[in-house]
Every structure is written in structure tokens, then in C-alpha cells.
Amino acid sequence: MKPLLSLEESTPLSFFSSGFPSHVHGEAVDVSSPDMETFIAPFSGTLLHSEKVKVGRPNRHAKVNYDVVSFLEVDGYKVKMLHVEPFLSAGQTFRKGETIGKFLSTPYTGGDFPHAHLEGTTFRIPRLTEDKPSSVGKVLKVEEDFFDVQVVDYAKAGKIHGLGVPKGILNVSYPFACYGGILGEYISLGQRVEIQDLPMGYVAKKIKKNAFLFEWKTGAISSWDYDLSFKVLVNEPLCGSPFMEAVLSYGGYPLIRFFMKSEFKEGDVVNLYQLFSRCKKCWG
Image (cartoon, rainbow, N blue to C red; front, top):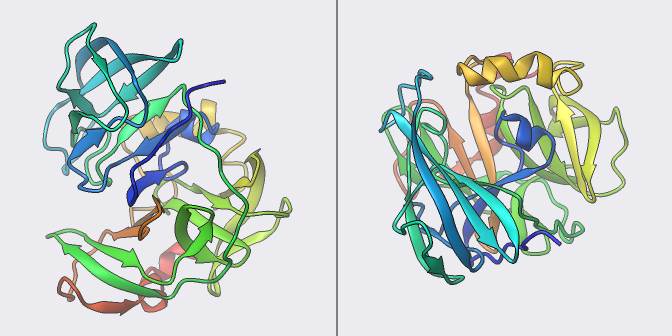
């Protein structure tokens, strides 16, 4: 079995808020850390190789013009890691729970929550254990072009906490990525996905147990590899300019990044529905 991730409490994570094909196919997970600055190893292993790669993709939020591609050996499997500058050299081993690198704000990740992109691992998505729509947030961080909000009344699938919607948990970059994920059960293809009464799209594919993909533009997922993926590579909006990114948390507060100027201060309690309603052009 592929290496199973073991996460620290309150670690942000995301399966479906990226437009890159490995996420659309359910083959990758983005893992942050409680401090969202340094990467804590979710398994033990060995760093096999790292390579710095210059990236020409435009992104005004990026802090560096390169990314780092690393390969790790974990339990006999090879794991691919992106967006982390390792503190290790090739051949060095590391233990689960050790800090092994720092997150990079690259042309691929600038504007996203800091994270490591991991391929070749596995993570179990439990059944939905607390189903409730989310409406209350607390402002965590305010920047010039965006602000981050903790979801206070989150839904739960075991230790996975997230933005609650009817019958599930939402994990999405919207409308930029043109698709998203919903964690839940007994969800049927064609079912409409809503944030409260704002329609986001329709369920198009079951990706794994307790995880489904929905799309805003009909046919987006089925045409991904020969159409939309090329737009992702050059950072073109797939269904609209970025409005929000909703990520999950392992045992902590899930997060939403709203890409707009904020009139709020850190610590303010906000009505999520009122914030969602600001993107009238997002909902069809």
C-alpha cells in the first residue's frame, strides 16, 4: 500500500483546490503545516533527489521564480514532492514529525495557502460524521489583496474538518479552477452543489470512496487533459477570476481565502453567506 500520511493536529490540507491534472484525477494531496511556513514530514523516509526548476508561468503573488521537485523514498515507494525547499541533502533520512523544508511561494503556488504537493501517497477519507452547513467565520489574516477566514461552524468527516454544505464538505478553488470536490456519502451524479442557496455546479464524477467532483462548466472534467490543463499551465482562469479557496483541516479549523480587499480586522467574526454573496458573477 502507498505510504499513509500521518498529519499533525490542525494541519491544513486539500485534495481538490488545485487545477493541476493529478488533483483532478485524485492522485495528489496538498499538505501544509500548523504554522504554514515549514513542512513537517507526515512519514519517515529518505530524500533521493531534489532539483530546482525555473518557472516562467506568470503569477504576481509568487515570491520566487522557481520551484523545487523532490523525490522521496517512503516504505519502498517513491513519493514526488513540489513547492518545498528541503533542508536535507540527497541520501539523508528523516523521521515522521521532523521539519524537513520550507514552503515556497512559486509561480505555481503564489496566492495559495502554503503547502507541499505530494504524489504517491494515500490518505483515507472517512465517512461524514457531522453534517451541517457553515455560516460563521473568524478573520485570521488580512493582506492587501486577500484575507483568510477560519470556518467556526465546520462540518466533519472524522478528523477532516471543512466548509459544510448540504450533504458534504466543500474543497475548492472557485471559480478559477472550474471544478471542486465534495466529501460526503450517497451523492448522485448530476446532483446540484450549493453553498447555502448559491448554486456552484453539478456532481460529475466519483473520484474515490466518500469523495466526488463537481464542475461549474459542463464537460470540464471529462475534457481536462486535452483542454483546460493547458490553461492551468499558463495561469489562465478556467471559469473566472479567483474569488475564494476553501481548504480542509486535520483536526482544526478549516480555512477560506477570499481574493478581495477586506474591510475587516483580524479577529472579526463574519457571516460567510454574506461574503459568498459578493460574487454574484460566480453563481450560475
